[in-house]
Length: 417
Image (cartoon, rainbow, N blue to C red; front, side):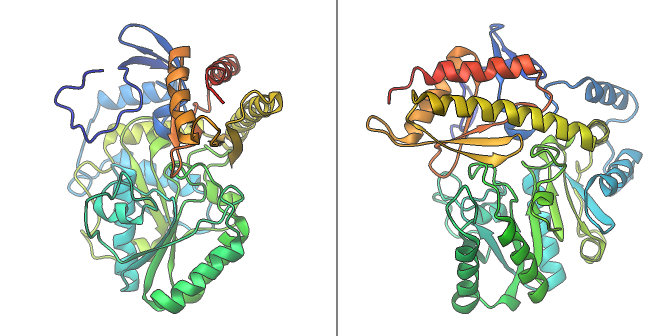
């Protein structure tokens, strides 16, 4: 596919140009149909052009498209932060700021953490991903392609192994690494925040160990360190709950969200405890486009649709379909490159292992092409790009879900062991 005037530094997974979409189906400019298991990389939990979102956006465009909230507040922004206070399952009242992207929410979280604690250091985790802006880059637990050739990045940042049933790292090992960090690298009283994804996205859909999460919450409380949960990809229903941290039995001090928050319109947020979010000087937070009125209208529609019972039903159905297909593929013994399944709920990954003829990454790269040829669009993840991440809309019709999984099986048939 020719991409004139587009920077060659932008990586493109699939060389096709999408023209239209409806829920989990998309059509390219040649009117070729595909089933979309990428979902905008986690943006389209409600699918392409959800009717409730479309109606909300149309109505908003006809009344007010934008107002810079810092200069002239508008009702949409106020309605979204009020709705978030009800939507986010924490025991304390929220204070919120809306942003344009997840990376922007990350940057502002670091700003809040520094301002509140008077400290600078941040602890992050191997294989984590928190954005592509400079400070967010340094949090990422992977060098290539994000940090290569960029030199020193804003810090200081320290990384720990990510404990998970999916990573092979135990809670004890990660806690030992944290203790070593405090003893050898930096004292706890110089750490401003610890940032972690309850379920890693780019890292391969790995669930944080709940035992470790509870211990980490205790460490943060003991040393007055802010715990930041990054739910930009795992939030808004992907795991069967509104946010993934509820699977861990903890509450964060600050929470990052984005992606599916506005069903495809640019909107993200940093929310947290009022005493933290309100501590910076007036004017320290904000942005020209942050909390755009049309994006806010979309977010309100999203939260209205995403009721607890609905999310659970959608996730259970999708999880059952994916797990059943995976178990069938493994039991057939036709696909020796298939390794473990990762994740939770409808946020599922499949590890591709090395075989005699190819590495796991090569097998997955071949699957992406074969899948596209068959009519299903797929996305890689993981440090080695050997984990298939499945992100079909939660609203995918059962027949389309079954068809998409069948097309993946058809594509698997083309891989050489």
